[in-house]
Length: 124
Image (cartoon, rainbow, N blue to C red):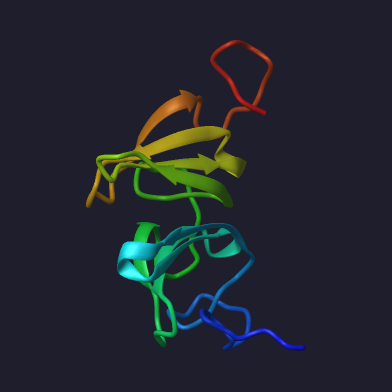
């Protein structure tokens, strides 16, 4: 048997109809949407099932990575709380970022941006 493509299917890349190492997934049944940690595009996106393009939730739309409050570097996983706030495991920045619902500026709530280590305030 074969699967059905519900998001992506246009090759690897950073365009808004492509995925680049999708890792974390969350299905929102109420909106028929997949939220995706698009790791090598350095963003979190929302893809309505069977739509042709995605919408940016956090990070940059063009695959740029960085350490500022609006940028991510290889986001690996994420979770939403009951208020719609987004928590992102920003892997290569060694931090957890909080994005309040509808906001593109994140706040580091764990770790020290771009600094790994074994101290109590750092993440590896």
